[in-house]
Image (tube, rainbow, N blue to C red; front, side, top):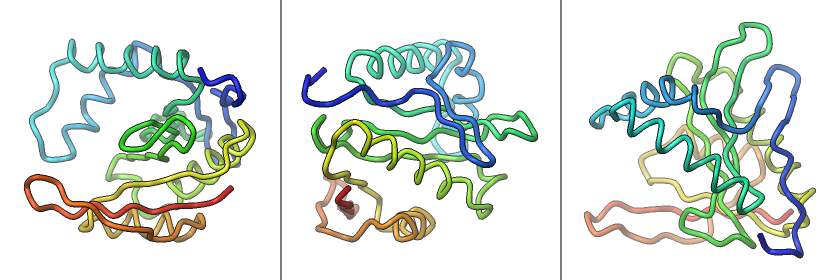
Length: 168
């Protein structure tokens, strides 16, 4: 981990949500979430390996995505957190993905707002978010939490990726 940054809080509680670091048992619901993307569903073993990798990378780098559980219902609804992604450890990306059944209820905004506070507490000065130009719902969340469009890049398949930025 870069010593000039504090470790991110890996346990965050908001008004409606409890967020924490990945556990191996998260593989089964993560597999279902990935399946909602319309791509081939991961095998349970591949999902397990990915979840363990996410946890290990978070512990190694001091930042990571956290699972999101609704406090009242007790169900896991997705993840949100900081990743290196297309960016850097100094200026990481915020990432979030929630099950479709909970879209439109403000959970992504609530979780992402808490992650922004956690990022600021590490001493970071800026965050990024890269979003496919088709993803209107993610743009709405980013707008609510203070991100602005910065520039675009294009994947090999021609898909536009919009880079959004927020100073902390």
